[in-house]
Figure 1 (cartoon, one colour):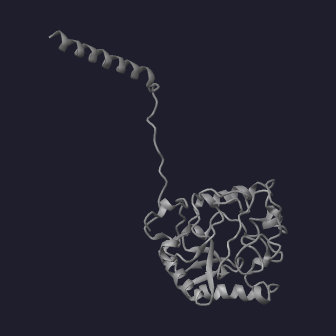
Figure 2: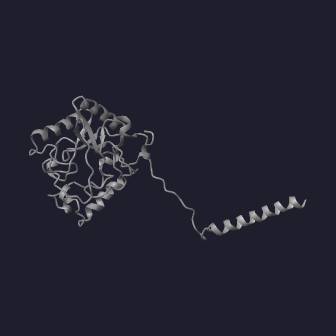
Figure 3: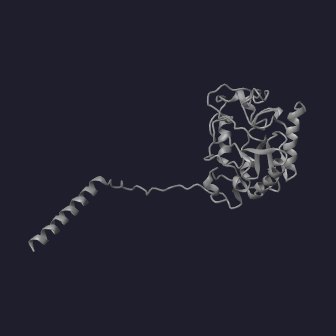
Length: 276
């Protein structure tokens, strides 16, 4: 009996010590403290897909998750470098890409669906007239105070509806585009191609997101190979239901839009369209 009782008392003491230790090292909740909550991000409606799942051959060089933007830093709401669009837009791009591949070209997207929080980020940046770190490249000839008046920045964007894409053409085989290094010397987006920031796309006369009238698709000053490249892109997309924004050679909207009146704010993230 004695030998049996002793271990039981030892176990009881050990358990009591453990309980006391746990009491010491476990902080008690403060009086009146609310339980912690985890905010979950909204996901995309089922009509949205990752472009890569529908047409994996399109080159994706998503700019806004990177510092190579007219803001000089990544844009709010871009968590992953993934192109998200409505399914009808993706299917139209698949048809255009199939035709272009036979001609030795590939589409390359710079931006697709854009959350409202990103548009809000643009607006805040445009109102800060002191921040002109990227002016030399993206808007050398435009006073920043005129970005709203001239239509370069707006409080709503068709991109937020999911059927608008910014894209260009790349001659195959495609060479890689080097990464932008923050702080590197900048050159005007409308300069000669070999003087602009390097891009593996064909020469469209200006770089992407160039706030300049030379970016107008049919600007008469753009001639020769540059004009032919713009027309090739425009015709390839027009044939499958896209409409070009005349002020931006890279901006196209697929019609009819799946969500013509809705501006979404789910993040650009793989999780937003998981499995699609």
